[in-house]
Length: 224
Image (cartoon, rainbow, N blue to C red; front, side):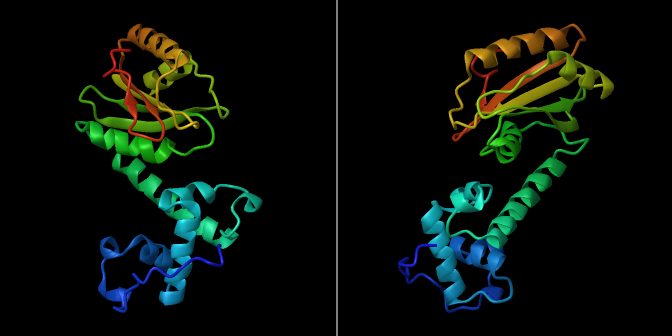
């Protein structure tokens, strides 16, 4: 933590117990997470310093996964609490896609994919298996790769879809570089997946690429 972090003068005198979580500033919210039971001007100042040092809440979330020597100022306890908070959000979104939920909103799908895939330091390939009414049967990470690629096997996706009696599939993967533009390799594996699933009368509805910005839909780009 930077020792010369200035006070912003934005801290409240009003007890935070009177405020709803969505009414708290980022510093107040972080203070309640890291210093439960004793949010005060000092804890809020320390939280504000962390936010400034790491570039906000997302920067803190990314830093929390780094080795201690790579996140100076963010101790192990704070890093662990931030990771736990992110995991709670990830699981809540995964449970919101439990069996029976119909994916009628692209925004809901993209929010889930962004939360589970963005900022991962390795490529992760995930699948949403759907029934005939596009209701979620399962959401699963099937492949994990390196920082610049992952081996995806269409046969494995097809076998899993058959086991789940899926009628349609949405797939997605992240680019750790942050660039969400589909690569030539992404386009090639999408075609192979589509062809493999089509033989089983299973539709590939979309392939999303997740980076720093909004996820890119390959279907909307005419790449499917």
